[in-house]
Amino acid sequence: MSGVAIVGIGMHRFGRTEGVSGRAQAVHAARRALDDAGLRFSDMQFGFGGSHSAGDADTLVSELGLTGLPFINVANGCATGGSALIAADAAIRSGTHDLGIVIGFDKHPRGAFDTDPAEHGIGSWYGETGMMVTTQFFGMKIQRYLHDHGIKPDVLAEIAAKAFRNGARNPMAWRRKEITADEIAAAPMISHPLTQYMYCSPGEGAVALVLCRAEDAHRYTDRPVFLAAATFRSRRYGSFEVFSPWLALDRAPSPTVDAAAAAFDAAGVAPAEVDVAQIQDTESGAELMHMAETGLCAHGEQEELIVSGATAIEGRLPVNTDGGCLANGEPIGASGLRQVHENVLQLRGDAGEHQVPGDPRVGFTHVYGAPGISACTVLTR
Amino acid sequence: MTAPRFVDPSLLTDTADGPALLGSRCSDCGAHTFPRQGGCPRCTGAAMEDVPLSRTGTLWSWTTQGFRPKPPYTGTEAYEPYAVGYVELPDQLLVETRLAETDPDRLEIGMPVELALVPFRGDDQGSVHTYAFVRRTS
Image (cartoon, rainbow over all chains, first blue to last red):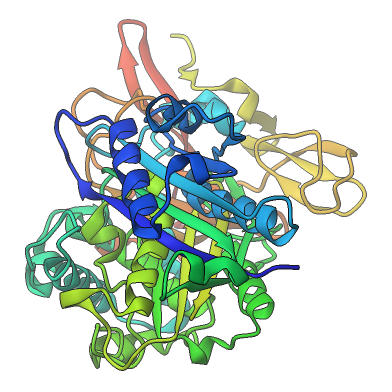
């Protein structure tokens, strides 16, 4: 079996780009990724990709080139990018293909997502009575987590302040203005204990990656980054997930725990070896919980790590160095690939003002979302 | 006067103690669900039977709703603060619910609560009720 390398990366800036469709942003990202690898779309043997609200990825061929390649649409919510990457990984490892592209993009209207309960197999009463609201789920989940682990809510504002500090150093980020922890804590309460600035917003953006067999990587780049693992897991009985009219009394670990453990296992890398991590921060509490669920630290240890600056770009465990979802927004189809794009920049040493010092060699990414899914990667060089 | 309309009568059943939420119980493994469903999410069997859920429990987690949600929410047009939470029903499950109390300072994990039917919207034919949990005093 072949290993898999990432030899080209491309991105359309996240945020709001009036007048530019999600598909056009995807084409922009794809062309950047192809240029980065010194390749043309006609060299691609496969394409996998998707968006949640900006159209079908396979229609991008009308702009990129009608070459006859198999282009498979992926629709897997927050794990759309991760799932496309897993498909590419399998296609290359199995020997089916040598070289291809994955593309994630999106363009969402302003404001919180509104979701139809029927799409989740839930009666209309659930939405009518005001419980089909994702922001509530995050409030309830972190409320319980803080209670169980004796963590003070003040740390939630510190996490968001770090995200905006990192965003200010990242030219591709949406939110590029620092906001102090005091301002964040004093912002309007959305779902207790989470205020407005502790949540990310739906946004726009696109990312593309060109991948190939590891042994071919030096044909296209002198700085390949290797996809040591890409994993995906769904929820088990007893995990606490969004849009759940009921939960089991038995508590089970989140799909994050399973997906992260599988990724580290497949890569043969220990969490302690991670030099830079991008983890799902739909809101501040998510970053807090996911730091421990991914195995990067112990439950209850996060408060000290965050307050001491260990998770800052210059810290010993840099987390969300590009500003994460909080500073970049969450275009669902693109968000997971943004994390991989950031880690490739970091491992190449190309992250500029937000570069992690010390020559990072191992990067970890993690997405988490509805209806209880998680996808992780380990990148090495 | 007619009884208030309920948002979805299939969620409720009558018991000697008053209305209760109607769930399912797996006759093979004992797992509970709400609302009712045909398959067991724990043992993957399909031997589910109807069961009234406990009318009392303790608050397991909670949060508040700081703005009027977009559709499919159909509550009162004007924003009225509300809270939601999960209530632990002993030996059954955790049920997600609206909470009658909306003041964060008076909501606390572990507080005893009981089922109530409360209005959440009205029209020219009167109010429509849903279920909620309120602090248990007795």
